[in-house]
Image 1 (tube, rainbow, N blue to C red):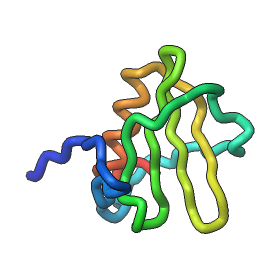
Image 2: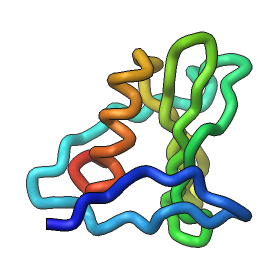
Image 3: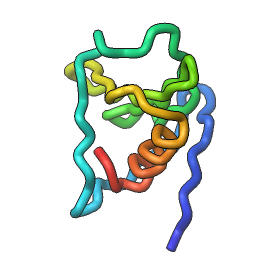
Image 4: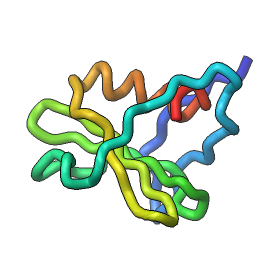
Length: 96
């Protein structure tokens, strides 16, 4: 089994996502107006492959932004530990 690790990405190139797994968890995506204020991008996936995911951090909370050709959406803000767990599940195809 291959272990994937989140990378910081560079020059717009982060990790490529595998296909969603058969029993993939559905993430509740909200309008971008629900985004945390003053959040910064900590990690991201490859910007050449849609959708692109960003792990945002700010004020001790994390949030994930999903960007598609139709626009962007975010999930509910969560603790850093829960955000990193969701980020890792997205990178492994276990959540979308």
